Every structure is written in structure tokens, then in C-alpha cells.
Image 1 (tube, rainbow, N blue to C red):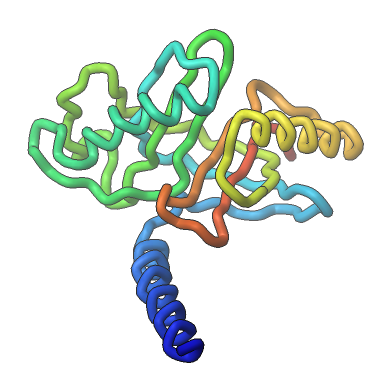
Image 2 (image 1 turned 135 degrees about the vertical axis):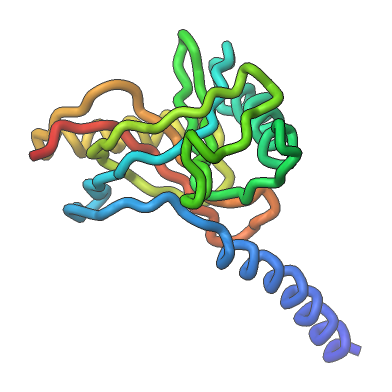
Length: 195
């Protein structure tokens, strides 16, 4: 009896993990180059990328992730002038602040501003991000506002200790699909002065 329960649990676990693995393996990730690794963070260079961005009055992770994701997901799941599905990539970018928060999906590398279908929702803007140098700190689990604040403060302290000047807001990058239970990847990044 115990062996059959154990086998059943093992088969169920494998059936849950395999689809997650293959979904993660197929998902295109925004490219960057690691320039330097420190104990708690790393310095990266991000080349320009084509982004679909929506701006909202949200002032928290929960507010922005829910309403922003629905709008952007609608665009990539066919809510565009070509009724074309566009592959999901990672990470999802979020800039949460007290003025105007934004969420952005990185478009697959096969697209640029000229060949990307136009969104049906006029709130979604297609933009090219600027090249930038950032500092990044990583954490696991399901993100929330407390985690975003905690890791932004940890990254800020590490940058000050290393005498690295940062610019602008601390931003959130989410890499994991909502259904991914294990090995979730979240990051806080901030633009830095780097030579």
C-alpha cells in the first residue's frame, strides 16, 4: 500500500514537473552580459530590446501585476491588428513608483518596432529600451511588495558599500510563470554609472 502511494506520488510529481521544465526551456530570455560578480549582486550590460509597455496608476506589486499582466497578455495572445499570437518571453519588467508605474513584456528577438503587430489596446506602447548598465540582485519564491522593498534595500546597501553610483528607480524583473512552483527567479535591478 505504501509503495503504491509512493509510486503514485512520484508519477504525479514527474507529470507536473515535465511540462514546467519544457515551458521554461522554450521561453526566450532577454539577453545581457555579466560584467562583474560580487557576493550579493552582479553588474550587467543590457543591449536595447523591443518592449510592449503599459503605464498604470498602480502603486504596489499586487496592483500592477494583476492589471498590467492582463492588458499585455491580451496583446500577445492575439489582441493586435494581425490577430497574431506572440511568444511569451522573460523577464517581465516592472517599475513601481508613486507617480506612474509601468509593466513591460520583452518582445521575442524576431520582432522589432517595424514588424511587430500593432496592439488593439492604445494604452500599450511599443518602445525600444535604451542600452544600460545595471546592478542586479536575485531572490526566489513568489514575489510580493515586502520582498521588493527588502531586496531593493539590500542592493542599495551593497552598491553604497562598493561606492557604485545608481540612477533612477529600483525595478523588478520576474522570470517565472505563475504555475512554476520550484526554482522561481526574481530580481531587483537599478541603472548604474559604469565605465
